[in-house]
Length: 302
Image (cartoon, rainbow, N blue to C red; front, top):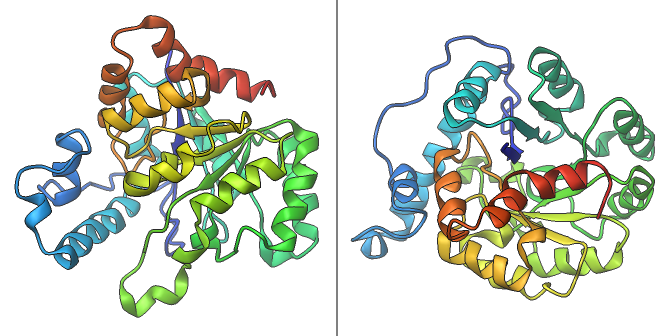
């Protein structure tokens, strides 16, 4: 069994109505992001000599293109192709919310919809979030960058405190990343995604299972590794290399590492391959990463 703990449906960047569209095709071309994935998420020959602005522009263009293919039909094709049995699908409010993901889950039982904090509702956001938990939300997703909220925001802290009663996991985006071209940079706040602040937040809420999406990112993962003694802190494998996955297996233990792809922003084939490599064919480790850890957290067992 395989559970992917990190995926998205819908246009999380601009809010276009695409989740249930049919026959939305992906771009069939080689780009720097795909080349990195083919090279196991490590630089390929010549990559480090490339102009940084050219690299950033290429990867940003590809990520935005993948965002536009986040349809239920495309997700189902990827799940079928990769033999994935369950998938945690994460909202990013205000563009994609729980109701949209819940509707998708009615069409495909492999989907576990999560909810988010609708900051536009003010204090009522907490009641809405808790109702979603009662109505089937598998966990809570917070994206400080795209929701433009710092980790010390009072409403966010209040929501986390209230979420404790659900016993369900919380996933935070970690590491600073620019999701838009300069003319639209007002749409996001990369400076709000601090790995060190997330570790402190996990310490502040020991009753919550706190998952660092992307394990702190491809360059700043060491800041999350510093939280190895924080027992309620977990990581997912999306966009990480075999070497970094091995580091987290060693420092956190396999019980606190989750298989995640960040589909469609990341392809599912690469982390499947890298998790298998990092586990050194140890079936116990593979079972933990691919489904046992996620299953345990879904039952409220930290």
